[in-house]
Image (tube, rainbow, N blue to C red; front, side, top):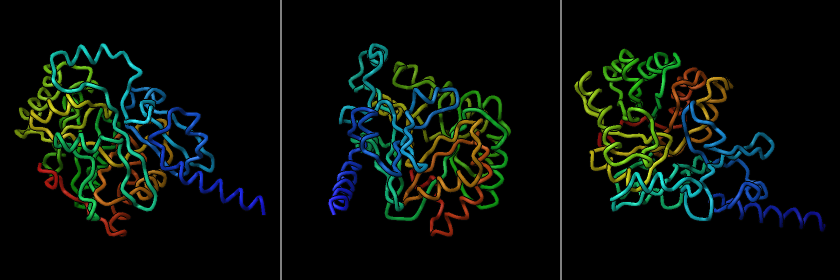
Length: 325
């Protein structure tokens, strides 16, 4: 009897504590919570050390939590454990806060809307940024980050064309320079080509002028080659500040973050298309902006199944006109 009561009490405590993922102060505390099937996720590129971006905690039974090291101290996903002089110098003279923030989301079960960092949705909305579509409708959006080419983008484009799905591809300067043929396909096949900056630098570390050069430099090169402008920006590494949102908004950009992503940028971590399929399908939700990296073989092989599976569940793939492109 006592054992039964103890189990019930522990279950209630864990259920209550699970709601406080964003408010844990250290990794030990998170481990003590025993959080099940929840992940705080912050995306990045291949050339960035995963251990710097995230801490992966094994909770057992194939459940993990990816915790951004900047999620701490009860407030929001900001980074105080850095050389603040870099950001103070970059924002010298600015009237906007340049406190470094790293985008992160907390996945939820049962197709519920994920939880973004506290205060982040309001800040994005203030400057016209987005991470979700209309949550009252079963419409989802596919986006791909293209830092470099790993041979899978042609297949991704083929699958999108066959299934009549529009996607957004966020490219960098080197990608535009080295893979004009693929970018041309994106344009000609009706996809959105988004701005991931020239050199993929963390925008809060740059001066106002440098931010403009990183963003407008890529847009100019893209316009010269294809006669089109860029309207959507995905901040490199998911790092941003109020200042960078304000500057890029004034440049005419919509900062587009995401409501789903996973660690798919490791080219040496091939887990199979079923893994990618299950990751996406288990986390679909109304208005989802899905971030996938095109360097992943798993993503390329699973994409057709993902599109068909999502449609079978009643989801439609939206176009980026929904966000004012």
